[in-house]
Length: 323
Image 1 (cartoon, rainbow, N blue to C red):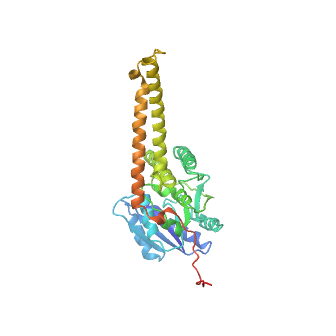
Image 2 (image 1 turned 60 degrees about the vertical axis):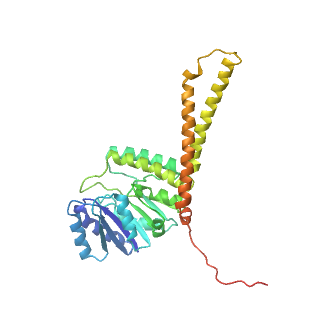
Image 3 (image 1 turned 120 degrees about the horizontal axis):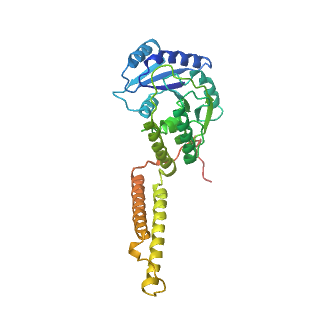
């Protein structure tokens, strides 16, 4: 069964039309489905519309938050309540086209675990399109997973992927990156993108800033989550090496000036290199110390099963006999 998760924030005008389109999309490929709406603190009549849909259709379920907790929290709550083997996340504003469901399912069956939508012909204003292109380039460079559209709300993945991911903040956009880091096979598919018909966009400059900060978080989690000292220690050693080199140079210069008296130069205490070197030594020592503390935290709180991902298991079928 396909579980479709739809976060909702003030989208009352589009919900019934969305359900009808999802029904037609799944019927086109004979796919059984359930549709779970998560009302993320809507202040319009969205919850009333959802209640009506749930009363009329057995496929519809819903969760209502006490206030707005964010899209990642909504998706996380939805994934915990799904029953399907496959999970599709999509937005409620009708910009994601449910008619793409058959194509997404076919692509997933080609051996992928996650399919990320790609709004190849994007119908958004320029102030959303160009920052998104920059963000996608940064995401590919930092994570090693090159996708055209990390921000696309249309994502299909297997239920076992959801079981291994923990979403918070705005990490929902990095589901393919987090899955790729755990060894799942990620692909993408060009999908139809439609202009907004109802409601208002939730996009803003703050969202781009938060997304960039979350990208740095994802890079750290996927690259150094189980070995933080490898990053912090490397930074610390680099700073420490620069500080030692600077102090060594100044020490040699002091000897040449005051002991051997071979050179005449500006006093050591007035040179900027002295302050830079001292600062680098202190920063290096702090970074290494933070790395050690992070390693202690990982060692005492990390769970062994979080360090790997199992594709399948084969249990022994019998017991051997000794000769």
